[in-house]
Image (tube, rainbow, N blue to C red; front, side, top):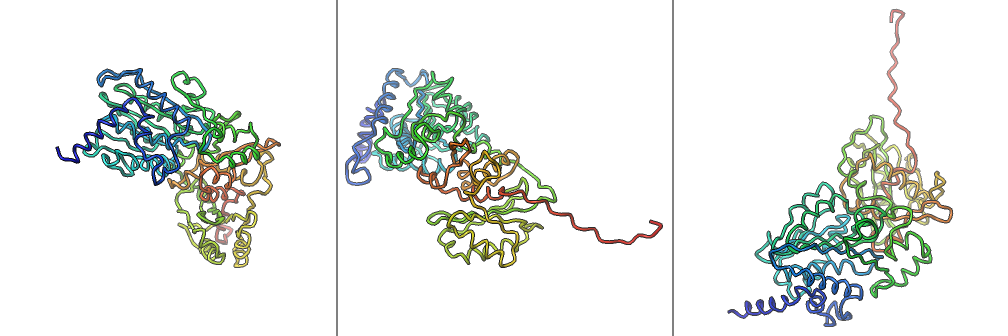
Length: 493
C-alpha cells in the first residue's frame, strides 16, 4: 500500500474511535495550544464540553447498527450573545462528516448574511483546521468527501419559505441525516415542518441554536413551550461563558436593567416577557421581497439619505414611491468618500435633478442626527435651489407619544408598510431590517435599538434600513394633477 494510502487508512481508524465520542474528536482533531490560532486555547468551553459529552451518551444509548432506524437526537441551545454557538456548530459538522460515511446534512440560518458570513464561514474555518481537512472539498455551496459530492455532504440552504423543498427528501438510511439551524428564533415554522421528513430513517440528528428573540414560533416551542419534552435544551447565560466580553455585558445590564427584555434575550438566553424582541420579523421582510406592487399614478417619489458615521459605514440613498421601494436601485457612497461633504452634495444634487422613469424626487429626507454632516449637506442643497430637502433628527421628538423618538416613529411606520410594500432582495437591506431589537423605556415608550448597540453585539450599522425608514419621516402629499388647458366655449357648448 502506498505511504499516503496507509496514512489515510491509519487516520480513518483513528477517527473511527470517536464515532460515539464527539468531545474526544474535538479535543483530538484540532491543534490546541500549538503555534497558530489555537495557541491560547486548551479546548472547548465548559458548556460546549457538557453538550458534546451528552451527545456521545445519546449515541451510545441508541446503538444504531447501520440498518434499523433509531430515535432522532434533538438538541436546542438558547443563549445570550457571543458564547461560541457557531463554533460548536462547526465542530458538529466536522465530527459527523468525519465519522459517518455517506452522511447528509443541511445548515441554515435566519438570514443569508448570517448563513454566509458567520455560520458557514465558521464551518469552513474549523474544517480547514481539522486533521481530516484533506479528505474534503469545501466551497460556498457544499462541503463533501472527495469523490462523493452527491452522497456524503453538508450544504447551506436559505430558510426562506419558498425554499422549503430544499429541506425535503434528505435521507441517509445507513448513516446520519442531520440539520443545524442557526439563529433559529427567526427561521420560519414551515422550514421546521419540512425538515421533520429527514428524521425518519438512519441515525438522524437535529440541532437548534439561537438568541430567543421571539416569544412564539418553533424555536420558542422547542426551548420553552409545548415541544420542550422532545428536545434536550440548554439555556446559557453569556456571563457563564469564558469567551464573552464581560465589560460589554456589564454595560448592557447598566443601560437596560437586569430584567429588561434586552438583557433577558442578549445576555441570559431567556425569551422576552411581553413580545418579540426582534422589531421586524424575517417573514415580513421575505414577503416584501417577493410581492408585486403597482404605485398609483399620483404617488410621489420620496428619497432618504442616511449618513455614514465613518469606518465601514456607508452613506445610502434609498427610494420609495408608495408601496414600491424596489424599482429604483439604492445609491451607496463609501464612508471614506463621504467625508468630503461637497462630494456628497454633488451626488445628492444629481439625484434631485434626475428623472426616474417620469418621476423626480418630490422630497428628500436627510439624516441630520447629532454632529453628522447631514445638516450642512441639507443646507447646501437648499442653497442650490432644492427646497424639497428636509432634515431629520433621529433622536428628535416623535409625533406619536408611545414612540420614544423619530427613529422609532419612522421604523414603526416602515414595519406597518412592509405588510403591503415591495423591497429588493438585497442582503444588506434584509439584515438591516431584521437586525434591530427594541425595548421600552420607563415611560413605556418604544425605543429602537441603537446603531451603537447593534455594533457591540456584532451587527453592522443598518445604513440601508435607516435610509428606507427616512422615507417615512413625514407624509408627502400626492402630486397635484396637471392643470387642464383653457378652452373657451361658445354659447352652443
